[in-house]
Image 1 (tube, rainbow, N blue to C red):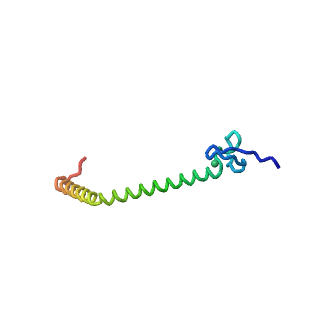
Image 2 (image 1 turned 30 degrees about the vertical axis):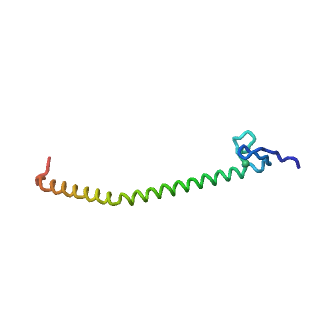
Image 3 (image 1 turned 45 degrees about the horizontal axis):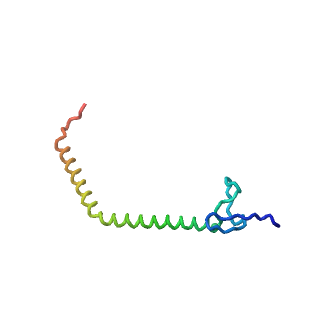
Length: 100
Ligand SMILES: [Zn+2]
């Protein structure tokens, strides 16, 4: 049956049966402009780049955390000491009467 329409992929420029193009409701001909293999390749690439980005991000975060761990510990100790000191002062200076 010659019902198969042909369509040229706007990505790889090869002419294929419309069956080789995914459906898209809002497209003029009801099909995407990229053929299935181009569409799949793009999705795969997007997935890969997203995974690669996450990997780079996590690695950088880990390195940064490692590098600053000592600093964090020092800051935490400093804050703890400061809070302790403040608490000690407020305990020493606070009158044993309830403010009204
Ligand atoms: Zn294509």
